[in-house]
Length: 142
Image (tube, rainbow, N blue to C red; front, side, top):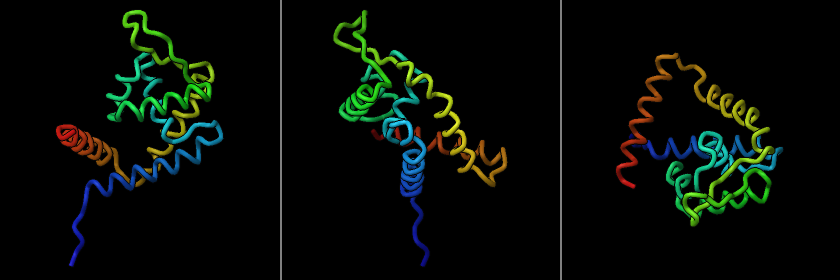
């Protein structure tokens, strides 16, 4: 009797392996794997507020607040009052975070290459297309 396959289980395993790998690679810099994903989004969207960041990452506001607080305590980000919305704070990268960007980018690219070993370019594109469709489908049920 074959075991039923589960997309969620496979994605969850890949997610955990990614966190384990990134934790090992980033601990030298004082960044946890959880904070890493917040930091990478800030590299793309510096100056956004916590609420927008939480939406982009599909996490709750409390999780986002904890991650930003930790990044702030470690000197990777600062919060600055938003001039257009005084109730909101922009999240800005410090020089410390900006200097680390090349190492983080390289580590993430290496991990992606490792995950895609043995896949042809066509298979890689198909995989990304499938995963994007799965993500879209999942987003309909949040």
